[in-house]
Length: 383
Image 1 (cartoon, rainbow, N blue to C red):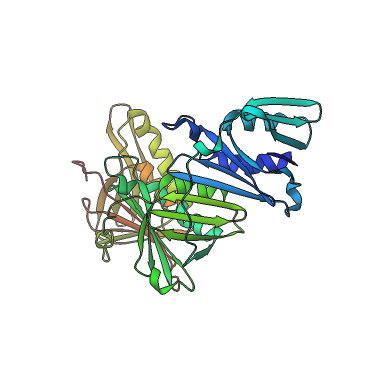
Image 2: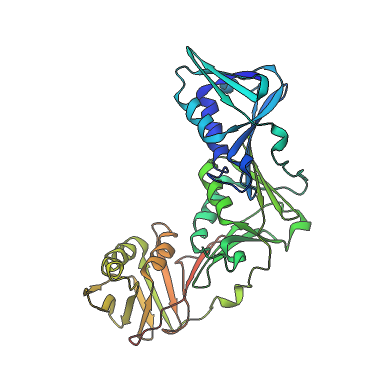
């Protein structure tokens, strides 16, 4: 294998692929990156067996300046290889595989030789059945992920809750994440969905969707294909393969209340800042409990019952309707929920101090394009 390439372009693609490569792996070859050179393209692959990222650099891409001399493939230690390429002195890199899997990197007057591994030891990625594609605007899909994934569980005892659940409906896509203490749900419109995909329900690991948001440009459309226990994303010159989580995601629709005894309308910015101030004491005390007290003409955030101190802050609000109520909750969970709406006005709906409370934007949007957050309160003798 022998080729030359533009260093800056190469580093950018190496960084994308490296996101899938673990620092340690049960299969040692997975700490490496596979390079496969064909007559018209260079394919870079990284994988941790759960998520795989592939970059396809074509000779026709002007910015890449890819020149192919001799075809072949090799696996190189990802961390060392990227570190060397990043520090090479010129913007042109020449890479040649020599005898015994030795790989020579040349840039200007700098020459490195590192040991590679036979690429036949690298796992083969699954064949993709590129049928029934779903295409979404990158910005919209990233927004769905960022507004929901923080509610996914970090506990492996219920693996199905550690991911983002997607369900496909006529005209819209629903994303849901929950750790059983909080729930985030976002609908986005979807056009021209293949009829065979309606009713499909899949759950994607948290790592996959987080890496996707880091790589995917806002202006780029993303296309994905659903296969048996596998999801494949295509955008730009990248392909991301991800396993799907096994199991049945809980039916969360029955958890979402439709009527409330108390409704509070607030600005997200001012409410989030007040939550941050209230959290100062509870974080030190490690109690993680803040109370919201609502009575006619008054809304206040309270921190009390902890040895380090207490706080009270009267909140400004747009409207308050219904019964007087005091409810306790985790302030970090509430801040995550509030911040997901951006700078806007939201409604908080309450049934009682023991029942889940719901947050939604204070507007009616046409079609399926709404976000809701659900929080389970903390039971205290004050609530």
